[in-house]
Image (cartoon, rainbow, N blue to C red; front, top):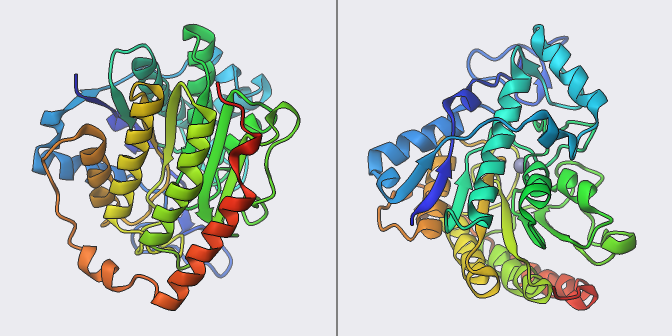
Amino acid sequence: MNTGFFWDERCFWHSGGNYAFTLPVGGLVQPLAAGGFPESPETKRRLINLMNVTGLPRDLDMRGADPATRTDLLRVHPASYLDEFKRLSDGTGGELGRRTPFGSGGYEIAALSAGLSLAAVEAVWTGALPNAYALSRPPGHHCLPDFPNGFCLLANIAIAIESAKANHGLGRVAVIDWDVHHGNGTEGIFYDRSDVLTISMHQEGNYPMDTGALIDRGKGAGEGYNLNVPLPAGAGHTAYMAGMDQIVLPALDAYRPDIIIVACGYDASGVDPLARMLATSDTFRHMTLKTKAAAEHLCSGKLVLVHEGGYSEVHVPFCAHATLEALSGSDITAPDPLTEVLDARQPSARFEGFLLELVQDMAQQLSPEAITPG
Ligand SMILES: [Zn+2]
């Protein structure tokens, strides 16, 4: 069996309205001659194109999926939100939260994006696929039940988890979010629950600016089951590897999940316009390899990656290709032309020393003692 890859051209037709970067056009903000909203289809479409050029689909099980149903969406989102979203979407589109504009038909595209995640989780959980990747768009990890934000209109991963729990008895889930922005939506949805462990490694104070603190550990039954690893701007490959080895993997070992889901954003890339980190395509490759090894020894390899952010049209395809090589074990490669320059821009020894000390300190404070194994 090959790694599943879930995608649909219609997800690339989601339109983000009249923006110049993250600013609505108007007043002193002039419309851009080209481009516009940073959450553009090009990052994902160019990934598909790169895969077609290298031949990677030969080693994957390329699939589509049905849109998530209203029943699926209602497990996470209130009817009032879905109704309003559908009403605007049936017209010319609109905006219901913060930085989440959508056009006509946006509701159906978002439901399809959630459906790709849902189908990937279901196929892996039921054993139809060993592991899988969902190229979901729009993304989901910022979305709260009734407040879409940060380009996210539906909480794709949460919807997939709740559906697999309702329909297939899915057990304990660990969600690792390595998108450079804090996974505030996933955190918020599962904050008081111990059946879903949420871990977010992100750039401190990027987006949202007021969430993602080290001390936010969950509440009630969920106390201890939320981990935030806020890294300072400028952190690179070594800090990410240390975060994985010293914080993420020990938490997984302590929790013993039945499946691991990754909110897989590529905006920690050293050339991403929406963040200030220095990850390389090898960073994503090695985070995937480490997570895959953990899944193999903890949960029969059950691992699903769901595409989140990543805004460099040039770099995202190479980072995602490296991730897919690691996930699938394919030897079809896409050598990253930016590796040399990003390797040369890694933090200095002095800053690296500070970052490693910081990760060590966070690892002590986030010790997985509070986590009870399943
Ligand atoms: Zn992001």
